[in-house]
Amino acid sequence: METLRPLSTHEERLAAFRAVDVYPVVTSEFCRGDSFGITRAVLEGGAKIVQIREKTMCDGDFLPYLRRFRGLTLEYGALLIVDDRVDAALAADADGVHLGQEDFPPAEARRIAPELLIGVSTHDEAELLRAQEEGCSYLNIGPIFPTKTKSLSCPFLGLETLRRLAPLVRVPFTVMGGIKFESLPALREAGARRVAAVTAFTQAEDPAAEVAGWRRVLAGEG
Image (cartoon, rainbow, N blue to C red):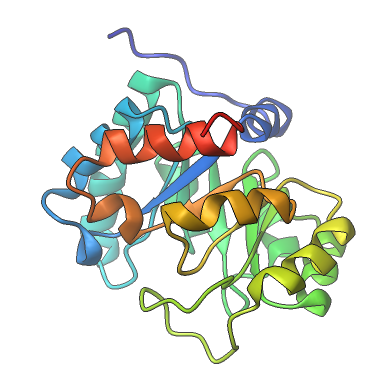
């Protein structure tokens, strides 16, 4: 497979993000097997983006680790997003960084990394509106359902809250949190077009087939 050139501008990366449907988040802690192999499998299934989330890996180990995934995503023409670490995203030539409410401020991330995609996790209307005011490229709304892969003090939102929040979003958005395959039609009906998940893919018996199946439903084919 021919390795593609990395995207270099925010406009190119945002255009690629708009084509995203399934958004796998890969964390070695929750992988059923090797995280690199699982990432290759989700890309084989058609994922156009992957986020690498390693909360506890030291910087000296994380950068070479991340560069392996950068090479892999370039093979498949997919976006690479780094959780939390703006410096690592820049050093690894990733396409973006995803920030939580207690992470690096989005406006500062935009100032030092103007060409990266800046994603922000939001859990209510106030956070959603603030993320947009601070110049996020995209945002995540969640958790939609109860989840065990992330420690959060906020309650899950549910579909009715998603229906209320979706019209307020002016940038591309994803949804996340406890999402399973059977939830996809209802999420699509509620306005979600990009769905992020961890264990649904990283613990699947066949991650490629799982991603492909989710993509069919989100396209309205399932």
